[in-house]
Image (tube, rainbow, N blue to C red; front, side, top):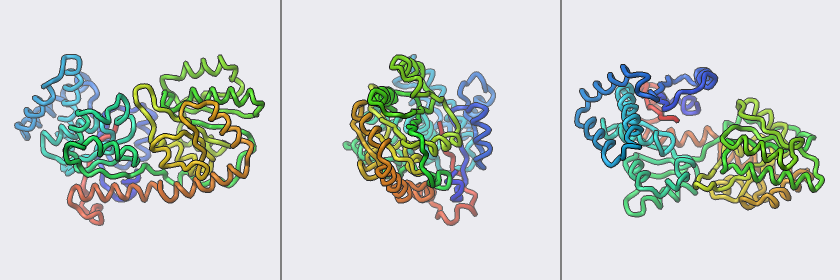
Length: 402
């Protein structure tokens, strides 16, 4: 949406079909066409056949070279998925029109399609990396990731922490251009609140997965309750750990203090942020290596003027300076988390000081408009077009989204 506001002409290719509500939201928000690639070949056989034939006729050498690459070295258990992604790539190449460049979000399947499209027809591509695509199952050190990224025109990391990890990935070979562009906040959508709520409410939000640290937050709430602290804790989100977190709340006798609210729209989340006395997200490194870098919801809480508590992890420490723009505890330390939350719940002056500095940090370093202007410049350089002429040319740049 921000790239659109800055005059970039986009064509968006999505690897997954949204729910009806998500599709309606995209239609309301986006001016750019959104093209959903076939998730299953058998559901759109005519489209897949047309794409295969079209690509063979236009790019025969690239088609067969890429097909051999997809088939080679894969065992039968992974061959089906590889061929499905190859069919999606052919649809992408066949349907992208006069596009001059591909930009892939996430360094896994979207980048795989972009790199295969390059093999087929020679189109350039770039990548924005995030967190799960780099750190889950230690992908950051894998030869497969290095291969997918090696031909990218540029790679965007959303933190200095992951940028350093990506440079380490290319120690033995010259790296592509790697730049840090932090995900920003749409500041007008998250105005600084003028009044602090009176109720002692702790809010947290995110996918209900291990790396968010919700189990530690619930343990901390038990310790807060045992200390006699009055509070309510609201956890917003959905995910695979919902049942185990609900059982944990019941087992620890916290049904009157901690509530799981499920997934909700961003508008409703903003309302909960405005009612929060404290926002907490005690992230951890999951057993499979997955981790958070710069969680958007932390930035949104800081922009709103809610004092935040999180953990000392690379990436998060680029956002929050302990005792200045928020409070940080060690990952996996429910006792330290409880003590920090308790301190913040009762110290109004501390909350006020942290909230003011947090908003300043977001304005200076995480303004969506400023940060995405940097991406806009890189995209224009990739296609050899001065950014000021973009609107006049009608240049189309597909974006791959999961």
